Amino acid sequence: MDWVTIGRSAFTVMCFTFFILVLFIAYSRRSKNRYDEAANVPFLDDDKVQEADNHDSASNGAKQ
Image 1 (cartoon, helix red, strand yellow):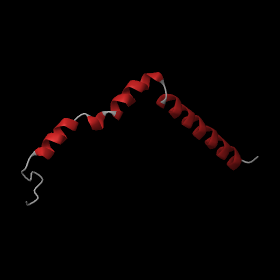
Image 2 (cartoon, rainbow, N blue to C red):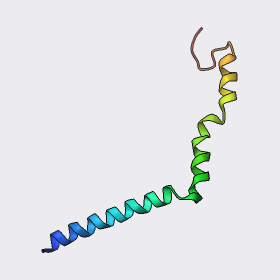
Image 3 (cartoon, rainbow, N blue to C red):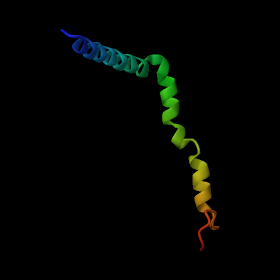
Image 4 (cartoon, rainbow, N blue to C red):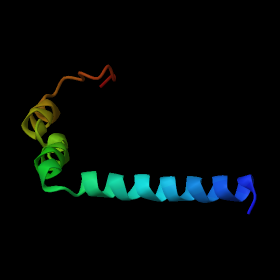
């Protein structure tokens, strides 16, 4: 085996190890609360959006 083959094999093993580490971190129980909170961010200001839609004025600069 030459150095190029050894380097490619080592790089493949390091990438696979990094991938497994990322999966472990992403699916750990400690991260669950953070991801659940991030998943609900789009729904936090839902009431404010509905109130803005009910106004008759063109608040976005469009002419009526």
